[in-house]
Image 1 (cartoon, rainbow, N blue to C red):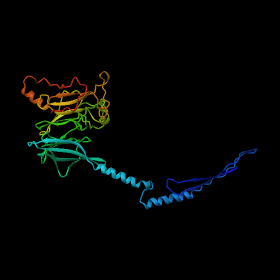
Image 2 (cartoon, rainbow, N blue to C red):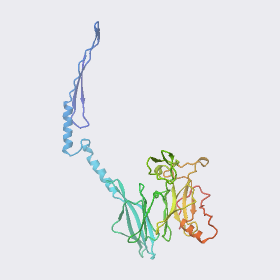
Image 3 (cartoon, rainbow, N blue to C red):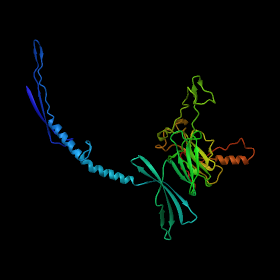
Image 4 (tube, rainbow, N blue to C red):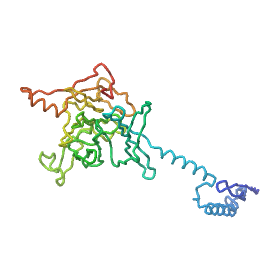
Length: 383
């Protein structure tokens, strides 16, 4: 028995006329003969001439319009509209931070605004500084006199002006083993450029939680939070553990990983514990704030107006798990971690006080906890 089937297939992909697909198939009964089974089957024939012709016509139509073969001609207007809308949104700058500085004139003040803009081609953010003068008119209205053009700041991790607005700190973190660079700018020139080796500390924290960069009122010192220096790791060679004093670059030697430490995870998975440091902007000397245990991760440091404990900061304890077990498990997207405010003396000022006081060479001033009765306290401010 022979069955003939004619199927009409529409080629919707290329929007071409219908193509006729003629499929002929035949089946025959299988009869058992004494000499063995006999199978009769007719070969199938498929006519694809019409499909090939339609494909050629669609390709020629797309080529005439200058479009790739995979682009639908009906979506051209929608693509153009969406791309134009995206470009309009990208042109709008975003304000990162702003600082206002008072002047001797009560009716006049100065402001510095940090703005950012997306660069679609380079796939990165561009950062600019914009200055403005704010004045009050006799009618109590506020007038802004903006600078004609913003100034682009490239390769900068953080921008922090001094309290008076006369100096500007630019932080340039390095992604490799290069030193961290701190630039101190004055009104017309670069006053000092300080290179800090990785053996002193790592990159400065510039996120919204551990970040803390603060000028003192005299604008002579800057306190900031940075990664602690790398912990010493054991070095081995063919004879086992290497003794101290030998170079780590000796032939046939390798460095161990050291003790494993849990990080805060998320965007901090490759960062070391945040620690507190103070730098003298004139000499470039950096000193760590001691007496802070490594179980505390510090951040958000500011200078107190006048006190022997001149540094106030926030600290998160890693021993916040069940029964005081270490547990970090992220902080950026789970910011309700227990934290407290602490105060510690300035390492430069503490040494000056010791030199003036007799008989206290063996004594050390420890930090104090300011919010002992609170489970969460952060973002300290003085008014």
